[in-house]
Image (tube, rainbow, N blue to C red; front, side, top):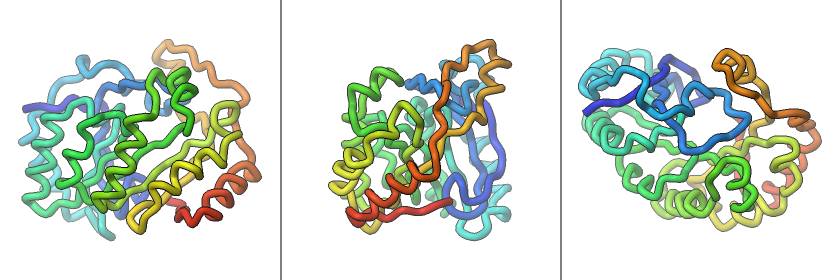
Length: 239
């Protein structure tokens, strides 16, 4: 089996705990107009495939760098769009006692099948209103909510990330809290990420139209969301 990968490299603490080798898997089923990795949105077909055995060996050889609780993280694009090879590789890594994590948009109904082979789950919760989320990204949040609740019930270490974006989801802190308090548990934490334009130049280089305008949020808006979540006993962290 093989995986399509469009990027890889080490990153510290932002893609799971410790120093981690991060693989960006090709293809995404959402079309978020603020995406910072637009090169990963295309279907996984243009990159050369990598046999999972080769990836496994590369990870094992890199393991001395996995300090402070580090390991390997699979992100995207959307990692769950390549489910069979991803699952097979995760099983191999857990057999070798490698710390594993995925970053996902949470839209795969098969996501809970991976929990047994993961140490950490990072999942986006972009909007509490399914209709509004679908209007912008093409997919609603029903399955995302189910997967967050499944992670709570399974007990996997879970980080829910909210990308706070002006004009999109900055006006509904109570709605975020209303759902997240139903998922609240010791194993679940929430992080708020302010909108940025780190991917804007990538869009231009790819010949794509970056349509985001006036989407920056203020520190006060971030504080308002944080305080609303905290008032519902939701654990907020910063990585």
